[in-house]
Amino acid sequence: MRIGILTSGGDCPGLNAVIRGFAKYVYNNIPRVEMIGISDGYGGLITGEAKNLKESDFSGILNTGGTILGTSRQPFKMMTVEDQNGQSKLEMMKANYKKLDLDLLVTLGGAGTHKTAGLLSANGLNVIGLPKTIDNDIYGTDVTFGFHSAVEIATECIDRIHTTAASHGRTMLIEIMGNKVGWLTLYSGIAGGADIVLLPEIPYDKDEVCRMVRSRYNSGKDFTIIAIAEGAMSREEAKMKKNERIEAWGGRHTATESLAAYIQEHAEVETRVVVPGHLQRGGAPSPYDRLLSTEMGSFAGKLVQEECFGTTVAVKNNQISYNKLADIAGKTKYVPEDDQMIEVARSIGISFGDGKKFKGLK
Ligand code: F6P
Image (cartoon, rainbow, N blue to C red; front, side):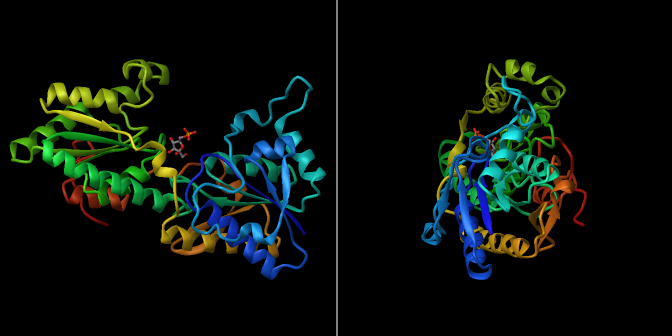
């Protein structure tokens, strides 16, 4: 059996651990397996750049960050667009799958990768997906690998900012990755003891944020920690078109700097912005992610054995499982407004900048 494997989209801790878990499972349990590593995500499948891997290539990578296969972003909307020769990327991928004589393609990636995996599957390729992303936004799975490692990194950033914020009596805004969903900001914000957590799913009231900062100040706490997601925005900004927002933010792609300036002016406190950025995606996976990645990788091996194609691995109610690609591709798992963690946060006085009060735990 010839298995092509690729990692696509933004990298995250745990990719190599999944690749290793999968490879070890198939070498140990399926006869005559050949593994073909496709370079740089769907980019390599489009150009046909791939190489035969040996069993030893999968050793010593459990705790390494990044991906041994390389990755790239290939927007889904471009997949069916024809080039000057009248060929689409989809057609090129189908042709290379055939040329490489693959029986199966394993794709490790996020929401975009799953959309393309769904398209390839609908076009007759045997595909099995694995849910990667620090954003934790893949529909149909409780958790994605990489998420908890990023929560650890972002939490450590918030911890470190806490001490300097307290020393200087400043309001610090820590911009956490997540341009569409706020899981990482919610979890690291709570774990890091943030006072205000701003998510893309809950547009905030700028004056309510200032009121919170001021009320902390007036009660003798002269510093405030704000965990703000890349995609968070005010209620007014949420009604604007993307280019209007960017203009309102002085040409920046996030609201963080402009909100910091607003707080400094209206709450009359000194503010600073910290952007940990890609640090949140780098380095070794946490032990939790090594376990999850190994479990997900080996489960994908079982799906291969059972020829359960057109699927992607998932965790549902703490049980390893899978979804059909057709059921989840193109959907996003947003933070629901009534999520238990939102209520937990409200119950201990964390503000989401929306002025809403704690309603009670489920
Ligand atoms: O999807 C993962 C993610 O890290 C997002 O949280 C972030 O907004 C985006 O990727 C950044 O993408 P890039 O690495 O292409 O700048």
